[in-house]
Image 1 (cartoon, rainbow, N blue to C red):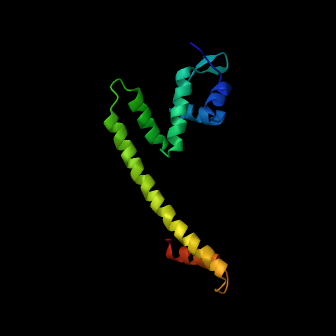
Image 2: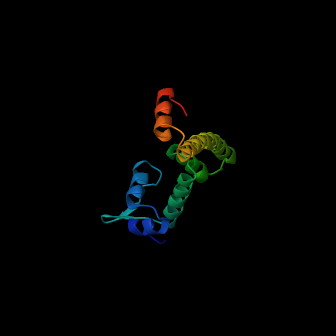
Image 3: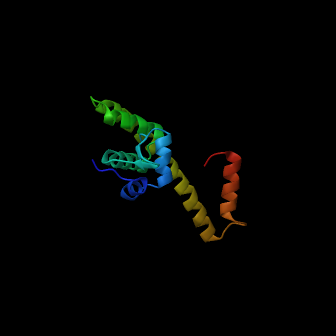
Length: 137
């Protein structure tokens, strides 16, 4: 069985060494065997870090990733459980997209107002001040 040091795991997965250590501390990555003072990782660890990184890129929370890892490593993988996590996350992503589109409209309107030069003062500052008073976009 091939074993690698943390630096090699970091290189292969393009994951910062401190992030790998963090994943160990919070239980997303099992504590590795040691060779003296050095951590010794295997190919399963490379795959697991790739899994975690990809899930993070898709915006899953650490708790969601922990649950997905549990499903992935279970004897009888329950795809329905994974689907529930993904469906919930999709709902959150869609809500975020709605918020981003709203922000885009406000910013586009503000930039157009700046370009027009019809207002006294700065339209961006006015918009930000009004948003702060209203509490919403």
